[in-house]
Length: 312
Image 1 (tube, rainbow, N blue to C red):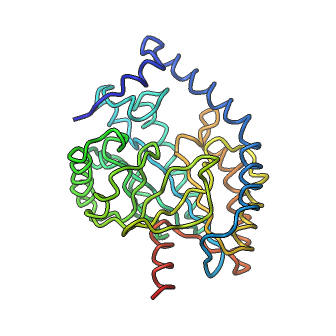
Image 2 (cartoon, rainbow, N blue to C red):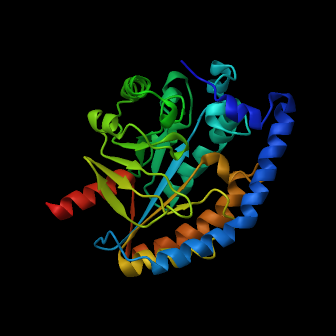
């Protein structure tokens, strides 16, 4: 059963309507854009000063993409009851519409550059007919499909029984696609019930991030590996300092984990615009390092395989 978060609904009353909610969302995006360069600079300083905790054979760039909805049909199916679990500003249906347009473009972009990434997919997406999974599943590149909750509810708000039910639903849904996810990305990055992830045979997860918590490392937690987040790419419109962080990963042989949502790449409704302005310069720079043999592109699962093989 889907539960609403009343506190979040109070932040954005439904009386605003869709246009009001879109306006509030765009205002928030503008605030984040103004802070983006400062955030990159602070991350660069922090990563420069921190001592390395995980050294690899060479630098690694990991990308995870959180698909919170994936289909406008889910918003219609859930009739607004799940809106607050998905986004503080936008209805679930509208987020699904944006992701329906963004995911195929993202898959095409990473396929053309031959870069494997982790697509963290919400389990309920398997309940509806949709097209966004096709370009991922049919890709010649070995992208990873990770789990991203079932209804996109915060796991910190779920009892153990509720969390177990979600994990069971994820397993059943993914089996329809012939998949068994081994990486887990917590909705809203709120980490809880790691013992259940172990029980369901997950191997890795992405821990909570933010300026003070982001880092370039991978650590063991029980039987799981935390493929730690390094930077949230959502509001970045100029990768001026991110290329320098990639240089740190190369020089010190560290993992750099970037993550974002498909709906983050909308700029005035244009997906291609942000891909040209941010994604291409950043990942094209990383491809140069790959050709030099100093950087590898990894998924959450493949980097864990690398670590395990190195230790065996």
